[in-house]
Length: 116
Image (cartoon, one colour):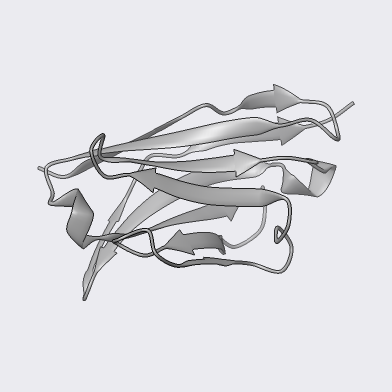
């Protein structure tokens, strides 16, 4: 079955950096667009970034543009989210999503906490 496993979350001070990883299995990874979403406590899940199946194009939410970078390694079936200049408002559970047409698969999430 399809599995998406996020890792790399943790606690960091404002201004710090973290890199999240999402390892995929059970699907033809190269065919799927991959995205990161996040959900802060008491708020709805929001889209953060997307990378096309080939890795040729990326898109970002305005709130993270210039600070976060999404990338993928199709040989490793892994998508990454490099986060820099982190702010307290970036605190959330971060989820990766695989998308192909109407198919959507989600990981279990990894917690990121930005606090001094």
